[in-house]
Amino acid sequence: MSRFVRADISELDSTKISIVGYLDNKNQLFLFHEEGFREACGNVSFKKVLGELDKLGLLYKNNNNRKKGRFKVSNVKERLNLYAVKYRFLEHDFG
Image (cartoon, rainbow, N blue to C red; front, side):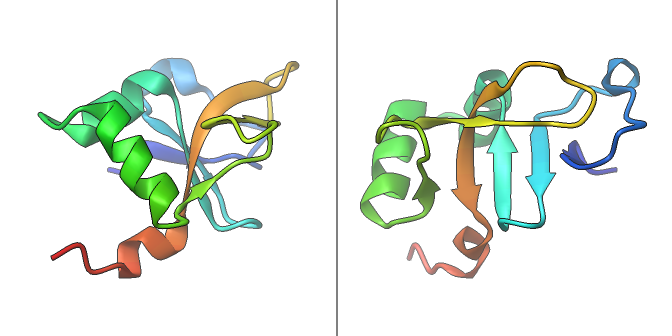
């Protein structure tokens, strides 16, 4: 089961599952909560991962060039501060 949920689904009850973030299919972004991003980084420093993603142009920024962007997610009144990684991250060869 995916631990991402679509950001545009209004009937989401995220209290029933432990999610790491949201999928923004419209903008082709993985939107991570901080805890989810740290988990995804495993044993690698999340700051180092953020720096590398940023250097490679895979980190989407919409909040004055800050690493966390501001996003609207269905069923959440206020905008959330989330790390946004472009879907094309999956196509990148890190070797």
